[in-house]
Length: 506
Image (cartoon, rainbow, N blue to C red; front, side, top):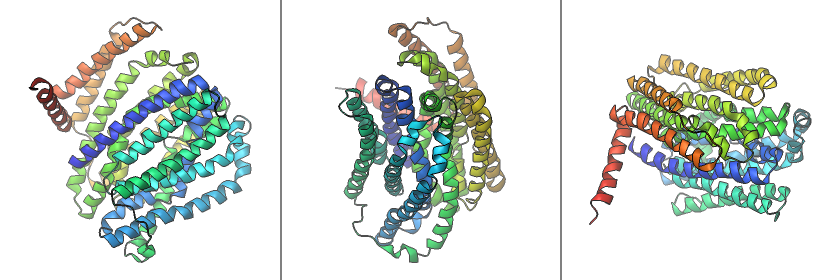
């Protein structure tokens, strides 16, 4: 777990910096300079739809690269793998563009009534998808070399800073909204160039291609695996974004989408540690399967579940205990505070996903990977069915409820499947300890009276008081009870460094 923790920690720091920038963008800049409909387009659908289109266009390349990279170890075969990663998406992108244009009438029929702005920017989604595809393809190549911090910096921080600059230019009327959208596409091209430069510095970039990968002994298996991943990947891409796809088609359109987006982004801060751990642990799980080292996989499964559950619960407690204060601080809070219950439901769904550990990565890297498409389709059916029923009744709250129901059901099914087929499961006695400490921390923060006011100083004071209570009871309990050896060891090492640096300074 050493390299997982180190790279995951670096990537988490970068991701949280990106989150801070993203939160500032959405809650302050976007709110300040955009209408609710413009915010719903730019912050939600403009960068959500291409994510789904990308899942088709990539043809499973990132997952294939992670699963089979151990068979491409020498310089010659590594060049072949790089060529595969670069060339394969061209086929997917061509197919996507043709189908996207072919189904334009259906797209117009679905969105024109409630979200005409989505129709206006119909063609922008094609170059955005191209940019996202190649940025992720190059990032996956960096992942298999166990380097994720800089790619995360480019994607999480660089692109968000570009968004900040563009919105400021728009806010000061230096550029129009159309120009801002077009320059957002350009920012992805710049990010791709930055990734290529980084790979060159790492001596991982090949300037000539080798199409010999089609004759590689693993190619047929890669091809079959890629097709299964492609089918499952489309559903996987819908998991965090399906609500933003459906909401614009119902009453309220992009306005409701903006409310949902702001609320869900507050909750999705919780899942950042999982994303970082997944990026670096997937190649290690793949190598463990090659060696048939199931005990090592079981160890990763349990440790990832416990540590992510602890971190996720701590972040969720901090957010939910302060949710009213958080909404009171943002502009137009009377509009966006309506998404309070979206934060709760999305937050609980993220906790459920984290506490079940790396079940998706364990499944997709095993010989049972074909079943992953079944589970993904199961999830898609659940969330589409629940959304069609709940969104017309409850709007954005209905979308969040549908996501919670589908996510919990999906993870429970995968949990039992992995247990039955591989004999491993993620829970330990530490899981129950985390639940107990979380409940105690929440009750303490909830019942201790804190002055309520919309003025800045009382609001911040209340947030500090609640946060201290949560940290002392939950964080202190985790350390005192030694619920997680990884966290206790990391805290001890960090504290020892602080003491030697601060107190022993000559």
